[in-house]
Length: 219
Image 1 (cartoon, rainbow, N blue to C red):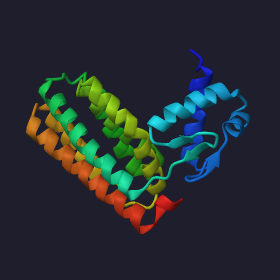
Image 2: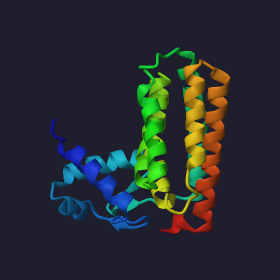
Image 3: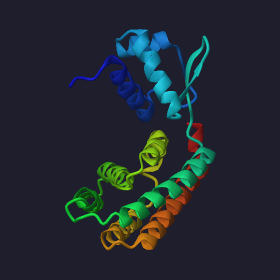
């Protein structure tokens, strides 16, 4: 099914923000963005409203949109929330008693992360890592938790894109994911939550330290 104009605008604007073509701190009129995307202003406006709720930009009356930066303080707050919510999802997944078949996608994402590390393909690793976290949250079976995490996912994706190639090789992250997966398989609620919360806390320290050290929030 083809994307609607507003869906296409969301996708294309998000890509422009992630690539840096729409730089953090820059201002853009809706008419300018409409011309750039070769569509009318209405779907661009609808897309901007959606991306504003996701923390990627802000709408300003009569001034168009401003692309928001990713700051270390933003990441501290976001990771604090994600740590608790995803830890809860890991616990609920462990409680659910899933079959091996139901956990196949979660396991495959870990295998793909291992392969990406072996091949030193960090972009592929990031994609597999995102699939792991998305699937973990889905397995937690809490629709409100899923919605809240989804609201923050774009901010995390931007910070990861900015720091992916200057961070240590994420072998420890793969080990953490495997520990969470194994705890879920054996139904160990406490261990699943503990490992995942520790994993997210470590990710927070890495991202925040890199943002501060390299002043990437100013880009």
